[in-house]
Image (cartoon, rainbow, N blue to C red; front, top):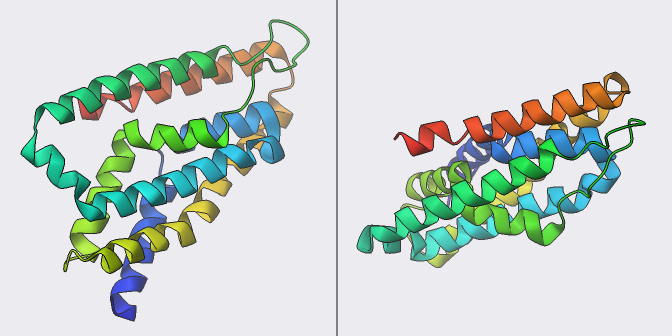
Amino acid sequence: MDMTLFIALLAFAFVSSVTPGPNNLMLLASGANFGLRRTVPHMFGVSLGHSFMVFIVGLGLAQMFQAYPPLRQIMLVASVAYMSWLAWKIAHASAPEGGKVGGKPLTFFQAAAFQWVNPKGWIMAIGAQTNYAQDATWGAALMVGVGFVIVNFPAITLWAWLGQEMRRFLTNSRRLAAFNWTMAALLMASLIPILFH
């Protein structure tokens, strides 16, 4: 992959990583509820988990979906179920009194596993491999994955940091609960384009 194409890949990876989607909404909520430091394992799970998925997609996983169309429906059902569970977890993160937060942030492995049922993540992975690894070699697939590693972590850190900064406005349990329920609703709403595509 030449340097011009790699720079274009980095731009694509940054824009697709920094725009709103399920990962960023969950990181915003985690930053607000648990702070940036406690959200770091979640962030690494998103960044490394997604980059690994991008690489695997480049090795031919996307072709399996074309060869076996029911697999796409299975993934869609798994995605809706997992995202519903995550929305429930976000909605119920605040304690009923005292403004203290109940629950725990996602672990590295939970966040990495989520990438496999994240509709936006699949779209990003397939788009990146299709456009930037046109020769379809394992080396090109790896470079696309590396491109995402380089820019994804800084992009998603912004969302967790914004969540942490919002903590000063979420000082009572009522405001925190309203924020969490709003984030849960937005997470579920992010499924609408996928379900009706």
